[in-house]
Amino acid sequence: MISTPEAASDPVRERLLKAALDSFLSDEYHKVTTRLIAEKADSNISMIRYYFGSKEGLYEEMIRDTMVPLLDVLDGQTLKSVSGFKDYLLLYYETMSKRPEFPKLILKVLALNQGPGRRFIQQLLERGRTSGARKVENLKSAGQVDAALDPDIVRMAFVSLAMMPMLLKDIFEEQMGQSMDAAFLEQLAEFNGQLFSAGLAQAKAK
Image (cartoon, rainbow, N blue to C red; front, side):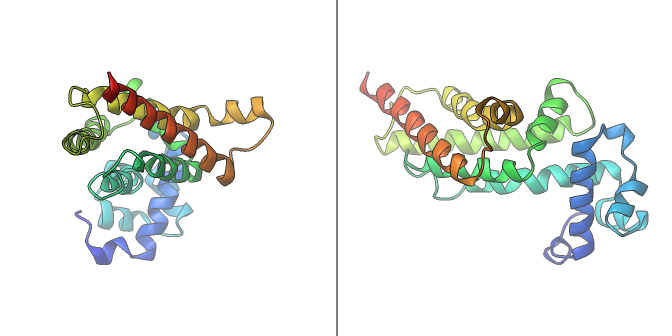
């Protein structure tokens, strides 16, 4: 079922999405049942059918609910200059720190083909690739980066800086003996943003 603004703000729908997120992040797709999700959401299976059509529809909407806000930023003004990469990294870190298992879920779907939604996630990522390439072209036109810079190189470098801290968050925290809390993530975003911007500036200087 296609979401409407009214449906998007419905508390039952929101509870179902949260219950689905908790369930799919903590267990394999085939082990999670709609009955379990409905019970966690204090709802019933008929409401899952009403809002999402099926278990797979709920699964895709759960992914969309997490990823689309990040993709929407690419269509805004955050990356109108290279300094905006720091802000976008911080947004990613903050979003994923609330749902630390989500990057691992995406990796399982794409790399290990576990659960449905591979084509759906690829479509979302392709949207990000297209929007990101457009931002790089805008930066080129503004003279902020090298005109010969490959947008896919920029995207892969940026994704690496964004995803790895969240994918290995538990290991990093154990090694450091401290939590990657809000203050730490802000420092990390600041450093990685500067690192990334400096890389673009070096490419321009060649």
